[in-house]
Length: 385
Image (cartoon, rainbow, N blue to C red):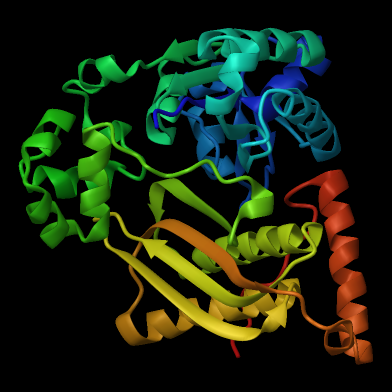
């Protein structure tokens, strides 16, 4: 059955909210994030992006690239409220919504077309309602699958609408650089170049088994994407069999302490979502990808939990065990996943005072994060067991 998938992405979300609420910031390079030595840019306005600034970039680097940038402390309670308004709009079109972050989601509107008209009608309506409700712009991509829908939304940013029809897939993908593929950065581009692959056309001509032999399963995925193939379904949070958080860095992380900091951040995000969905996980997985596309995944079974410290400790131990065995290498992608959902007995979870105290601490942390966002809470990373 042919599918119709939308990818929606609020444009430079955090920075756009700040510019919306403070006229003095409009038209100026705005960076949302911390300014300390270890500060990280959470969002960059399009004016700042013109200087090379981007999210997940160390603030010290962004400051060097754009000395005139205005740093703004994030107001995550405001961002969450705006996000709620946007997702309320999206939910009027389909229950099949897969949030990717606070400002981005996939929608499967295949079953909604008979109610709302064409996919283009739905996309236009979403953009109009979001602008009217929030005074912000949102880019929408429409395509037969998730990969192409995300590509479509990126092609016309900001404030864009792009439709990729099934019969135009090959024409649109054409001879574009492999850099448009998810997870392909400078190091990945060099690794593919060694195989004589620099464009999507090169990738399509390369035998699938060659890519698998050289790049593993990810090689097959790249081959599929070069042909516009992506069978992944849109999975609403409530149906997901796992909860995860991962990010790909613009530049490889070459400091183990920074990697551990990211792992702790991811574990905290995953644990917060576990508690929000009232789930307990019995398996913790750590995913690491390097610049040459090699990916390792390590997993461990634990007693069912939703405690942040349990998830963080397990994920960190998986990382440290790997580095002791294989040695550290610069990291391109980090992911933490919780799965094996279970409804743990209440007595087992909170049978002792320590668990009760940790339960209270975790929920207090969730409330702080809800109000003040990432960066309001920092967990130590230096101690070794």
